[in-house]
Image (cartoon, rainbow, N blue to C red; front, side):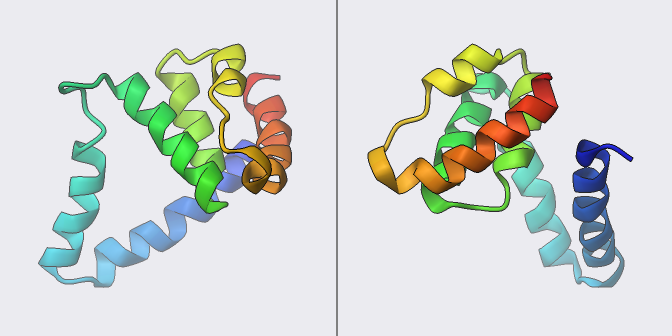
Length: 106
């Protein structure tokens, strides 16, 4: 199983549990997360890049998720690397993002 498949499986299991166990408002909240990434005044591609920046700044576990989603929206590896901002606060997650980007783009 590839690292990406492992990541997607890790993400799918708890999400499935939420939809199985949670009440309607929580399920609607999860659905809203998907809906806000649809094209609007900003393209989905732009929103994924913003999500990636926020993930890096927050040092979140969702860096890999936004890298995958950004690639699916046509973001190139060069674009993903070029957007990284914020100075030393992002160095640890930036190193991790480079590792994951090498897996996503090869």
